[in-house]
Image 1 (tube, rainbow, N blue to C red):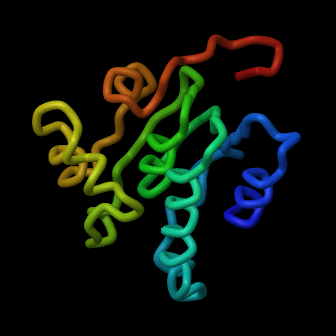
Image 2: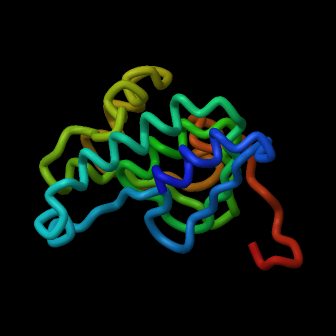
Length: 149
């Protein structure tokens, strides 16, 4: 995904970027422990992707359907305009692996209103689409239409 982001950034015919998840764990996060063992370079690749999202000089729009976990949630917050379906949810599940929030998550969570970021990081609790809007994970919830969102 990083390679594509870099090429889109350099392509003058591209004026914005649209990303969608294909089920659970969009935008490269939500790793299972077995996957980490197979790809020891995973965290480096994830941080490169986070830097690409943060430095992108074009609007990055996104649409989330279903569950977003871990680093995916932090990448979602980096988008210019993240949108979600009614069934969207986010789970800050780094704690389940014994990790601190990755991919800039500790920075983002520390800047959330009150102690909600700390609460989410320490409990791994899931939040629904409406709560995602209130907390800044989503810009808006898209209504269902012909595409079956």
